[in-house]
Image (cartoon, rainbow, N blue to C red; front, side):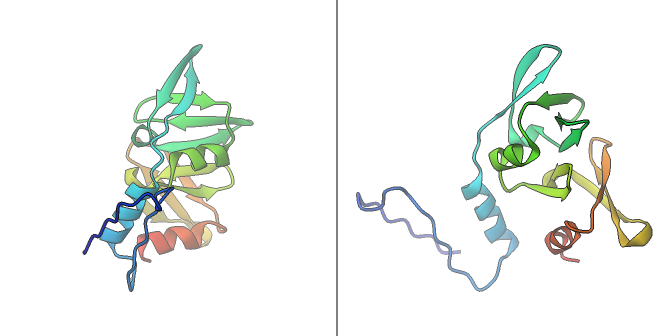
Length: 144
């Protein structure tokens, strides 16, 4: 891949343009890096507030009206709505149902289930079904 950088006072704010004939894994990685927001999410557990980085979060679920963040071994809650957390965390996450989103880096397996739906299993042991609305996006991401 060729890379060209132009430094000039007229380029404010900075922007990146990628010219390509197709999205390759290399291009997708570059997009992920450029779009990363690197803003930690404020989360609570046991009366304490924690800052969670994007790479720490495996899954986000809305359970009983509360937004919960799941890491490798722990569960946190946040006051933000699912879409707000997704906006903050960036493109490494994909919504798979009305109430669930996953970090694509931690998907362990995908299993076909009844009625053509898919069961997504994460590396931390959590799993959830992909709803029909979000199935095309996931299949596209997986190359199915």
